[in-house]
Image (tube, rainbow, N blue to C red):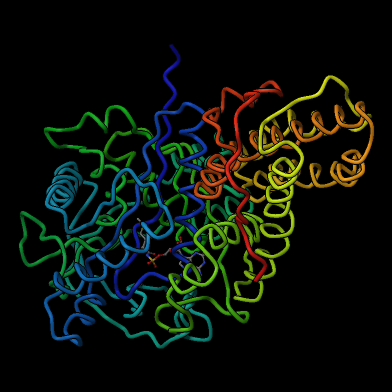
Length: 508
Ligand code: MSP
């Protein structure tokens, strides 16, 4: 049997404050991809987590009058609650304060040091404390941090460095040979032209001034600095360099790292170089998506311009939030987030297209056939086109998901629902209901085709809106919900009785 596995990850987020809709964006998309892969028979491992060390968190904890560990524990409890509220089906939530992670990072650091990739030196640079980033003069924008626009300070200290330049040629070769490695393609060009070609500077990988970090085992005044700690999560989570490394053997290399565009360079330069130094295979793909923006600006914890995402879930429902995130913005581009846009999406697609279709169909079946699933012997001139639309949807979904065009994939499912609504307008069941025996026979066919279109649509919708699909299956009272039941039209069992019609999405 073919061994189909899929390992995908989100970034591990900083728990400096509670997670916002931007973090939900990456995580919901990753969740939909994970669910889609599982549905299609892949042994899937979906990792998310938190990046808990560093001076910023140390400072936040101090402000709050708690220890850094207490500070992050509280935020992580909240994050897990948020992921549950959104139905995030992660297989593991890694925290960089987990003992296994700490040990793994220490071993990695030692190994790189022992083999000469890491050496001791002196760091001088321009540092942005809120972003925990050193910048070079040329990277600054108007003399300020290019990420957050705040002042940077000159800093210098003893530090360990990782000789990235040793591996630059191999990296360029890999990127050129594997055009799928950095996606979208525009980000690939940016990496090569802006970062690699000008020459890779050695990377500072330890700190003496940061106490809240993983100690370097052979030089205890140093803690491991940000990116080696953070990036290692993708392999430490699988048990790399531990006694329990079955998952590592099974799932590494990652099939997909999904990250925001601002950290593509860490994932496509530092991370592959670390892996080369460790003599490990490289991830197959890093996808850098765009940002959700509010009023033209980035949603940011440090700017504080956002609401708790659970407020949107409370007002509009989990699947409305998931749908917005999955559907609204072409994956890879930036897109606007606003409550108005969320409401407009929900009304247009979920209430008007999907909700209406399901409710009208189940109500008509109740009215005309006592909620029993029936089927006639006559067909209408509109059947073939409806059935073709339903049957071809899976191919479209697969094609788009392979390219990570998630909004297009989900829209291919909605193509079924739109076509089915049109089919109602074409066949006018309420007129057939008033006609002769042949019309009633046609009406049976029409309702069967509608219910079957809804069943197949709900199966294809499962990775994106799992609760909505469940509710549709409940109202259809069907157990025929496997992905293997949609290749042929006609899986819905005759003679079953539907549940009471109940609106699945109300207009807001
Ligand atoms: N801890 C690092 C990542 C380490 S990965 C080994 C980090 N954390 S973060 O908390 O700043 O999260 C950044 C990520 O959150 C982005 O790359 C993106 O996935 C997500 N987003 C945060 N704000 C976002 C938007 N406004 N829009 C879309 N995604 C956003 O960087």
